[in-house]
Length: 127
Image (cartoon, rainbow, N blue to C red; front, side, top):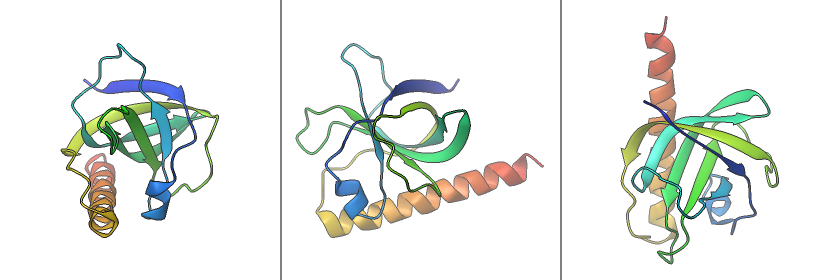
């Protein structure tokens, strides 16, 4: 069973963009049931078009700011104010404490590689 979420994209801090992975930030409303914190592979529907996505559900660097950050693979436009419908497919890893920007950039680069591999495998196995 796939988990789905929808929300309006809010202005973020810009850290993910600085680390090479711009994201659409969606606040998670109080009382919403979510899967465990972590990095997921999934899809994002933007105005009827589905994009492969890397999704991070975390409580932010402060541990109190529950949010979903969605990176649409191969898409690099500002989505602030737009609505996204997000579908989680599979968890790639757990959240780790913020190790610093350089190490985090390497982790994100690896996450992006794994997400692209996941979608490449999915498209070849569907043939």
